[in-house]
Image 1 (cartoon, helix red, strand yellow):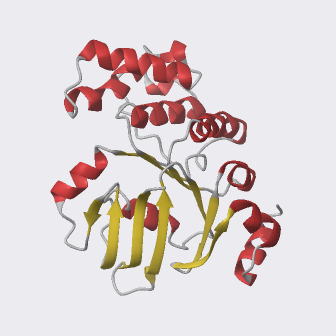
Image 2: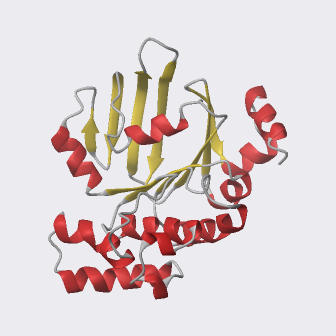
Length: 247
């Protein structure tokens, strides 16, 4: 199976403080779902943000969809990656002055030069896939948080990405809205989408992820099969995390 992400000895520090990434190595295979877990401040979000150039690395080697990213942080390489890698954040980052349909079609039309009608057809299909087909002409403020996050997922999918990155996509949602977003992500995983998901949703990670990367202090503590992680985590730090999460 080919590799979507290959990271070797990644290091990253902000200012002169503790390293955000401390010699991190991993690979993500095409078609795999990798859950990235760990306590707050463990480097999870920093790691996933390096995968599409939102954060630069200080040293190490990183290859995403066959495109190298190094400490030079080459803008052309980053643009190439972002055309092929979708990202969903904690906050929805939708344009408030555009309708849902316009939010989803903006990038395909502007970046990929897809004809407007074709982009709109695709957007409607994605909204239907996300279970919000009837929201196309509304504005973001008229939708619930869970609906807005599903729009954000549809917007990322509209670029036909080969890899989807999720940075704690449910952490800003009310508890009753979490399930609808996780269900949309479950469908994506079932369809074979390659996904890297930073999450605290243990049940989702156990059910959907192929492997779990557990981080603490910017380092990889454990990288293992998801079922094995949840039933017999090897590292004491992982075991402590799971017990504190009352899983």
